[in-house]
Length: 536
Ligand code: FAD
Image 1: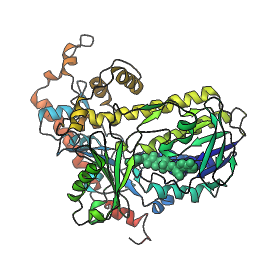
Image 2: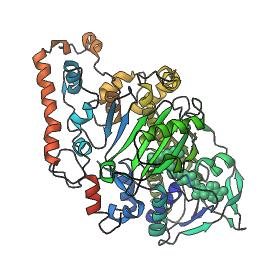
Image 3: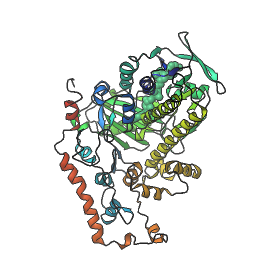
């Protein structure tokens, strides 16, 4: 009654296993992985939510960073998404202040009075962490120097996902007594009505358990192929379904090792560039409904040739990866639970693959812990009610994130290729849009513009992406027609008032740049701390 069987040894499999062995030592855990079916191996960029999961398993930077080729990440940069030649950041952490005047975020007043202000200035004005990003520097102990910098909340990692899985296996799972079997699952006994009854392995072993966790990647052997749980495709809002990935040696390590993920839009998708300690990882995520794979590879190499001048691009190895974008209706059905690509995937523009893995694992722990408090410590006794709560929570989070990622395309002004024209003209299904908005904000029939304006006062992704994409949240019409709370609108501000507001905002980035000017470069910081004794 207490054996959990995990199928799959990618990052999802080993993250699931380490979470369970650390938090539920009373359960017997077995992980089976095929020695012949490769893991996806991409997934090098994380977001700050990973710290919550690191705390849950009790892991710190010094424990794993060196073994996984890791660097720090403070932000994601988006180039050419709004218009070609423009870029902006979405940094981690909280904005220092989102000052408002007459209900309008001050940055938009600045933009009104100085229209030439680049959209990238939004992040620079409010996020103190941008001082580090802009100077390619890093430090952990800045709490007293710049506001709202909190190590752990403001930082995430770039790492080698394959090495990360192996590190978890060798340092957490195996020492805790997990049973590790290297063999292929050849037959799965069970049905949607009765759940999974047993697994038959290539070596003849039969595995039984109370809970089977599907971490088989896009194959989704248990949840999709056996439990036949319907898959909710998000291709209507996220068209990218394929990627080319490669690794590139550094030419100038200190310059290239920036503390952020760089995402550059091309003609039919976008390219990630992720600096690890020993190399760069890069890949082109695109829609194969808009460009053939061989042409996408050509476009990718053309882009790389403009950046990596001294690299022989023909000698690199390029991996062709297909993506299944969307999520199963439920991810916990009977005694079968899916975590990772087998559950669902949102294309990786916001580094969200592993995010959903660790977010769902935290939810799983909460569920198991809650159930075990009811005198059921030794058994995996989860009611259907709890499974349903788990399913709804995960689905809500996932769809919210997918909607957020879709926004990066929906607000484009590009029309230079059919791909971007389609992004601009995509007809959003009104029901889905309404459902998504209500999922995100808890109420229906609220326009995107007002929702963004509302969130401008808060931290979060919507204001950053909307501002970067030139989406103006100043709703002058609402101001003029507000009979419920009549008051002066923006029109009542004099030019002098506006300039004063704009000038006040200008002071923030200068102050933060000054406070951080003596910090080490990101590379130097890593070299002096994490990689002190290693050869380069
Ligand atoms: P996989 O890595 O595919 O592992 C599947 C496992 O199942 C393997 O061990 C395999 O051997 C095993 N298996 C399959 N069939 C059987 C069988 N019959 N018997 C036994 N074992 C079996 N995430 C991020 O967080 N950040 C990113 O920047 C990011 N970028 C990405 C870019 C691309 C192009 C893609 C496709 C994904 C990206 N991801 C990213 C997602 C990330 O790669 C995955 O979330 C993560 O690697 C987890 O994968 P997984 O463990 O679910 O599946």
